[in-house]
Length: 264
Image (cartoon, rainbow, N blue to C red; front, side):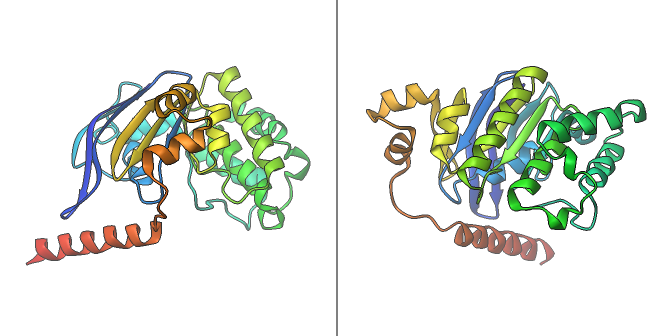
């Protein structure tokens, strides 16, 4: 369903993603893990048409998203780290607007919205403004919205960040159920290693823009001689702290320098 071959993304002389290759099978739950600033979000932005690769190739359901953007976008849903709901609309209105944008047929729109809001336990609050929702409720609504147009792939970029354990557990249970019932391929990032260990069938770990390990959680633990995915992750990426903000600032400076040089 997803095939990435020798993917590279540079910003001036800074290489954010360096010769990355991996494959995700149809219907699989795939975890893409790495420290802050390792290249995860840059990779997702290329996969979802928000950034154009410097070199390499991406295939989403057989399509190159850099060439056929609209067709590729119809095939995936995405939930970013940052909130994207309209807090001045109700839960139902947020879903309905999304359905219109993705051309969900009118005859199935209401039924699909009701099904997903019930699945994520939000139907009783469908008429309430999103600004009255808790963080966990907003996250569930965003993920319900991501499933709305029946995508073949769902990208989840740290969807449970800041949620309590009960909300995290409930959310992943619902995602897993829809993954199985609708055959949706799920591509996720998370810093909670217990989540990836429990839900992901295959895992790729990226560090400093390169893939350093791939395989099941069991395989990664065996290869590193560790007893948990978290310890395997630390063995592969080290235990030093990373500064994501600094990394992002470096990328912005490199981009600004690049555009400045082009103008000269």
